[in-house]
Each structure stands twice: as structure tokens, then as C-alpha cells.
Length: 111
Length: 114
Image (tube, rainbow over all chains, first blue to last red; front, side):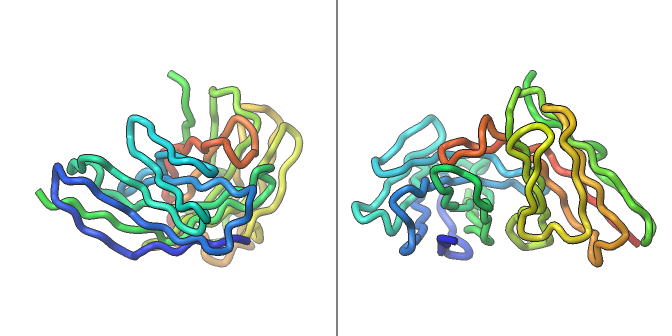
């Protein structure tokens, strides 16, 4: 299974942009890159996903490297409610595969 | 409101007892999933179901059983064979089981076995 590597923790100041990196050097051409986040004692929440091109939605942006071996989740203006554990996950195009959540990146927002 | 419900939020059981965790969705999703999360860890897949009357083992299926008799329901039974059942259990669903489909998660059930 293709795996991802993320920093254990990051800090950011409130109202500033946050860039959360993810390495996935063994990604295959048909793997989607998904990001989820989890607040304490809650279920994960979908953030964004992409295949090759950069993606934007109301929550965040996803920047995918040209060789697809890494990606960055961008929160444009962090708020205290963005403090969570962020998971970067690869998902094969046909599903049928185990969705593997690593330990993610714990994001702390400093007021 | 569409969504996934899990009940109860907290569950306490004595060792040696089987316990069933409920998961219901009204999103009309075909695929449903059960995950386990231990403190400070990521999620691990227990079982998943791509369609009614079908389910597959995940990474840690031993000591667990599931059924999928209805599209909207995917209950998980934690049997006495599960050696370390105390954990946070999360249910999820998605439209289909495809790479581009996002998963919607329930609020979770925290099971404590003593």
C-alpha cells in the first residue's frame, strides 16, 4: 500500500496561512490524495481531495507537486476552530482498498 | 438532516460479553466502514461494505463481526474474542467505494471494557 509521511505537529498564528505538507513518494498514477481533519473526541471530517491538479474549496486549497510525490494542504487564514489533527491519505481509483490513516499532523493555532 | 448516527456515545461492558455498536445513515450511500482508534493513534479499518449483503475484512477484523442486511445500517459486534476492545469506534459511509469518494463519519462510540 502506498504510504504518506507527515510532520507530527505544527503551530501557526491565528489569521495567518498554514501550509501542511505530506510526502507520498510511492504514489501510483491512479491514487487520489485525500485530506481529513479530526477534532478531539469527534469523527474525522473531509477537507479536500485531488488527483493531479491543484484544488480549491471553501475550506482549503490542495497543492499537488508536478511529480505527485508530495502535496500541501493550505488553510488560507487559520482560526482557532482549525486546530485539529490533519490526515493525508491515498486512495486507489477503484477503492476496494484499505483506507489507511496514519497519525497525522496535530495543528495548534496560537491566538 | 442527512448524516450518520452512532449510538450510544459511551458504552461500558464487562469482559467476556459481546456488545453491538449501532451505525445508521440516511445519505443513501452504498459503502459503509468501521474504524477503530486508540489514544494518540490514527484510524484502523475493521470491516467495510461496498453494498448490501456484502462486506470485507479490513486490517484488524479479528474479534469483530458485522452484518449489512439494510443499506442504511451496518452494526458492529465486538465479541469476547477481541483481546483489547476498549477504544473509540468510528463508522463512516460514502456514495460508492471509489478513490474519489469522500467518507462521512459519525460521532463515534467510546467503548470501555473492564
